[in-house]
Length: 398
Image (tube, rainbow, N blue to C red; front, side, top):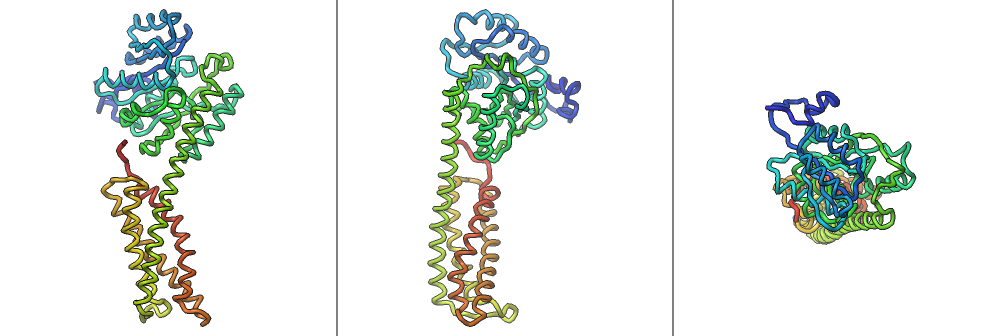
């Protein structure tokens, strides 16, 4: 069995990637190039890429009759060209290419997308291929340095998008606008339903990576801007607005999810607080020999109240907030509940005991003021643990 094209390339240029057990399986990668009104420089670029792979798909995004000779030349060289008469945008072209690949190829392990305007070298494209083969569970992003010899509008735009993207997802990427990406097979179905027909499609792809449980991996590539990027079809006003609109929509959905978490926690807390106050009316204060400073009536009341509210909170968070159907979430959730229940009850009782030691107020009365403060601290801790650990399981796309 022969190693794949990216493995052969890695042997010469990228020796630390794609060298482990290369004879164990075939890792098939298809290369997708969306094109709108390309110039003649696209032809030598594709021919150089064909020296490494024959699996190339070019999408003609309604370039018009004046460019038919370029695409005809590619077809004569054996490149698969998908065309349609009207221009719809880069996102539409990528989605069209994805569908063509899904329908025409079998056992595709990944897709590498690249631009046709000379910004991506074949060497970097093959490095992305090698990285994708080495990390088939990650989205590989070819990140440019974006410092020297970069047009001012590109430098400002990328800097703003980079910071906004990190705020929205928590992922740190140097270059969020790059079209050079290695896409694993686990994302294929999701990409067909992803919204956006123009440049916002690529940003949406990055925004949904956390939901898709597919963290990005950025590989440094060469920074190339030809003629001050004059050949780019990116409209600074219209396309930037489209991208920002989708980012703010994403942030709004994230905020809505957080507020739903607050609402479910508030409902559960009010239920627990009322139950605890009711129980303390019927459970007398008592101590144990090995814990004379602790009012076990408070400990017992808080423990029962926490158990009751945890059942309600788990149902609300699982069904409404995180919409998680993982089988292991209940085990992790109640492990968290047990830890919080013990720690919060002991802390509330201990602090209340210290306050009441002066005799001015009883421990039960003190606990009514201590409990909200302690629970507020545990609320913040609880949110992050639930988000990152308890309900952080792969979810099916709706």
